Length: 261
Image: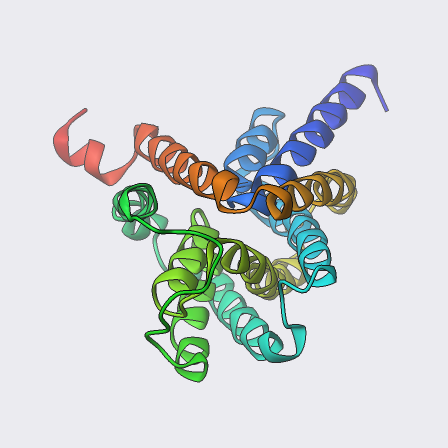
């Protein structure tokens, strides 16, 4: 291994640590890791597939940390994780059929709407609110649909899960964050299985970054449980806006193409 290769691996490891930290609190870790994977010269398909491998470590790490403190009921939420896994696998199978541009056009504006919801809605706290949808209905509609999106495209899936848990399931911010990590792990794992079969994953890079993700997520989830909504809410808003800005900054984004920017 050359010095340059080692430097690239070090950059990827540090990026994964930071991504795991951010992802365990507000989601959006892929906003950090995918650009870094591309910058070091990894082709797009392999970057996305490898990201699915390493991002599972952050979701698993955060899930373990939250479950230890009683913020996730693994027994009742496991069926939802399985539905998310099925959705993620179907999405990954559809990824080669559904043009990413179809989703890329609308997603930034949905993320901005989510950011505005969390920024402007009063009384968002860690206490549970009013449940608008029964858990069974939520588990067979919202969860697999977001999982499908996660497998096809991915950016912002954690934010969509968060919005569903808060707006429909009536979860407080900390509980919604905790349960999002478990469900996100499910959809990531489902799409990861498909990518593993196709041989698109760089295993050594993915596993090395996974260690960084695990470490970062342990630190981030601990801080989230300590600070609660005071930390989660602003980071979630920043994460949504940053991801929307990144998607809109792409010269090939459908809206920019349409406007001739």
